[in-house]
Length: 305
Image 1 (cartoon, rainbow, N blue to C red):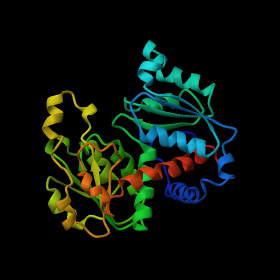
Image 2: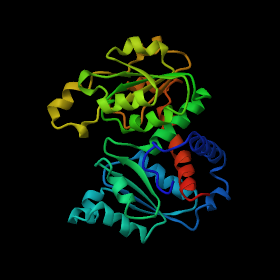
Image 3: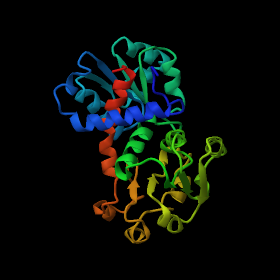
Image 4: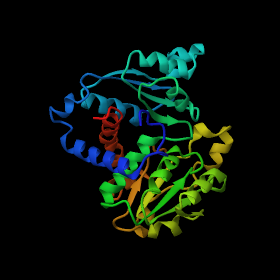
């Protein structure tokens, strides 16, 4: 796997190797030996779409491993893409300067197009509503850390499941494990697409859809809140109509399992009341912290180290 473009082709052995490496790195990331593993590498991080956690955690992961980082934010405006350069030519150019390239782009499958223009490893940091493979893997790592297992779990996704690249990345990963059941709680405007349903069925993942959050909560081991993504809507009015449909509130904690966890890929807008942050089940900031270790593991994976 020279490139990491999606989670579709990962085997269970590969996933478990990456998760185990992330666990090892979490324990040793400050060790001198770890900080020299990529000391001869340069990593390019080029983001055509806004990012805080993904960009900074990829860059932190590279720096923790001893790599040098070159970076472009707001690349639609501040790179040659503004002049009309194709994503393929951007990838070819970056391969002259860097040993691996991290790209976020608003257009689905654009990162895959870039990967066909170079043998330099490319890591997809999110391509529109398509996939976000490193987020899927860090989510899996979080669930494993918090619950001690990845089998026999009830997981509910709440909010904009239609446009969630995180969900799209998790579905292939969930199919590697047994006893996982999914429930999707969303407004009718943002239900699963036919393609998403087909993939769930083809991968033999048990799922159901609902519009009742309170009824879904008591059986959930993981409550995964998803922001209604304003950038995916054609108009402000369409977004305003659904943005506040499902909000996790303090009273919902009373019907949740004591060992359930609450996740969110962030940024949070108003999907989770801020008073919930102090509850032990609120795992979303721990989830964000796990990004560094998983992305360190992914860099080592593409370099076969």
